[in-house]
Length: 85
Image 1 (cartoon, rainbow, N blue to C red):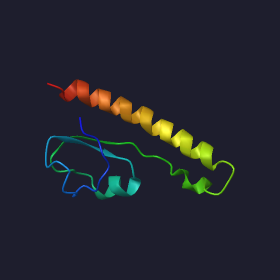
Image 2: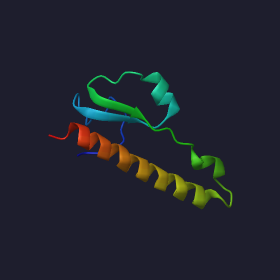
Image 3: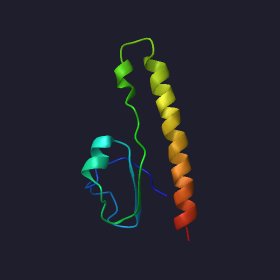
């Protein structure tokens, strides 16, 4: 499994047989169909940058990072069970 975050049209992105995970509401709304994707899902996250420069900044970024990790692991497991040979 190769995982990375790039723009959809980045040259290293595969053209088919991939999973698209939309994490931004703008991208989710702008790209309702992802050509070539076997599976597409949305995991929207509240941007912790609203806490930048406050005493809550480190905690907000840490919490969001852990949330993203947990949810991505769940999605990857579900996709692997469904699409693995």
